[in-house]
Image (cartoon, rainbow, N blue to C red; front, side, top):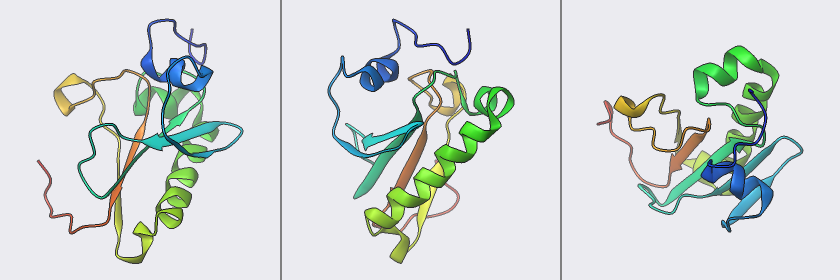
Length: 119
């Protein structure tokens, strides 16, 4: 069921504290933590505490929570000072786009030049 913790989900386990992570921010509805394989000097994941499979499902099932994730992504960028030179917020949706953990999450990337188009 959408929103319910999934026993086999890595990010649900981070939310519950079962799996450790380097948490940089937490709100009532979100958790932000350092990516374990950073692609930029600032690379933080912002996730909803409630389980939603991907960004599209999150937007359809809980638009107010999607807004919380985006707001927190901006707060993370400011906290990490990535907002000074610019940053990117990326949602990978589906395996073909590089999504490897099927719990909606935003990548906040910054701290270096980010060429366009990516990948």
